[in-house]
Image 1 (cartoon, rainbow, N blue to C red):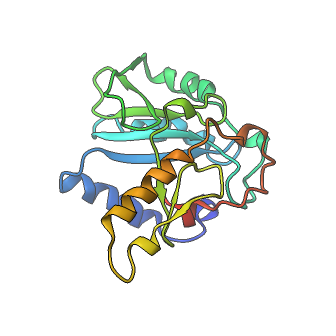
Image 2 (cartoon, helix red, strand yellow):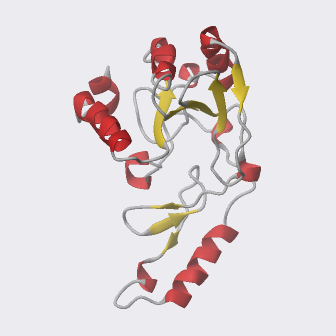
Length: 201
């Protein structure tokens, strides 16, 4: 299943990396789980249980129409409400009040568990009005929104010499371009041009 979804890499290496991150004291260690109906939704409880005796943030994310994939189909989206209901067989989820600015996830906790359960519902519960994210791509563009192709190029402020004032101006430009909301709920699945492997997390 890992190979079918990721297409490359090793599950063993990923699990080893998570354990090493915990061993050296990284905090928080976040595990993002994009759930796909009929593919990995039978593992919701298994993923959640990873946070029982380890301080892991298990973050369930709704499938979004980003990139080209055989998995991109609106029927494969599992809503955050459904995911929460399925998690509640493990106990009562208590919402955690955390400081603003920590990102789009809404965090909950099972009593007695070390880890937290996060939910990111970009499709059924958009959080655009409180989104604080900019994404720097590997080719030097600062993207104001994951759902759109536009971005601000930073290379001109970095080469041949670094120009701090210009960098600051370009970052402000990117912030000013953040849209009021995304259009993913109306996007045709499978035809979005963005690719997460190019954008980054």
